[in-house]
Length: 475
Image 1 (cartoon, rainbow, N blue to C red):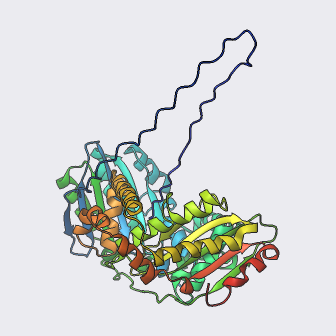
Image 2 (cartoon, one colour; image 1 turned 30 degrees about the horizontal axis):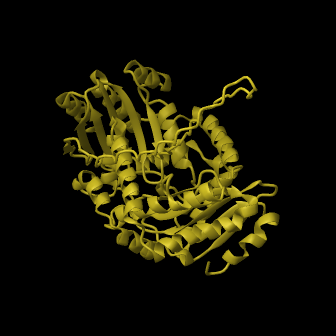
Image 3 (spheres, rainbow, N blue to C red; image 1 turned 90 degrees about the vertical axis):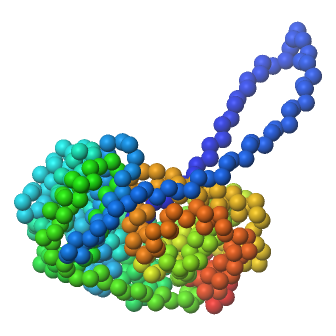
């Protein structure tokens, strides 16, 4: 589960209407010199993130539980995070984990219909949400505090006793086919697909979209087999955050989950991504824009360099005030909303810059992106520029964790990557400890343009000549 923040700057304009001057009007008085605009006062140092006091325990079947009392509002969030996702799919099962997750939500259980599940969740002041990504399946609800134990029991029923009915499969397959058609008609998903294939050619992380034939072949027997082979107590971690009665919550979780079978240990399948330069051009005739996807494998959050590299990413392209954004958006007008990011999967990570650029400047846009990478490799940023980025990152981090869901997301992130109890507590401090020299070193160490994969989706007839310089092994 990833949260993306965009900052939007709006400039207000005051319009002053003036009547035409006439011979009868007195002359306007001489204008006084405009007062010199004062710089706004400097902001205070961002406050460190205060990690809620947590209580952890483990059931005999291997299921883990984290309770995090937080806030004063009478609401509580409950999450079952299960280590199963697209990582667990075979080459002919792409999106199978997604269909399983939708059946968990819409298929009911052995004792409740899907309508009853939804009605019970609504009666508690919330709703049940099921999401899946590469590494995890998440079953989440946010309800009134008094119903926290009851919601824990409902989630336990959904994940342990799903009906997985065949009656819902045809509808879900048709929905998957529609989503596939819509997604494959868009440039950014096409570019992301080719980028993943290039970096992870022989791994589930490199398999993004199924074929129509694959979806049509999914059977309820295959779905039920996938569930039985991948869901179980030892792969599950229950998180609770908000205002709740701790003894009552512990009892509800223990009573509801203790009978679940231990199940298989989490699958560990760490990829070995390709680090060689690759160029991919996807022809999209008559496209008015080109989607550019540039990046390479880097490191995962367990690496000590992850926070310094994250700061480097924010300077380079990962914030509204970043260098690449300033260059190709503000200064040159090549694109509207470019961005860069570092992925965060179990023991795997990559950096990528993504931009939808005007067709006529596809090649120049790539040149500017590489130029900004090289500039940061050759020269450390100023202390002032770096301080602004660190203030931004620290502020965003605190804002992200100012909710029950945010707290749970961070706790789950720390557990997935085995980062330890001090990671969140020290995050702001560690961001502020990054130096300009470290930023330059991170760029030199991890962001080598000669090893970056380049994917472009656009009108080949109009952009092929622009891309000639980037089809070899160098820039």
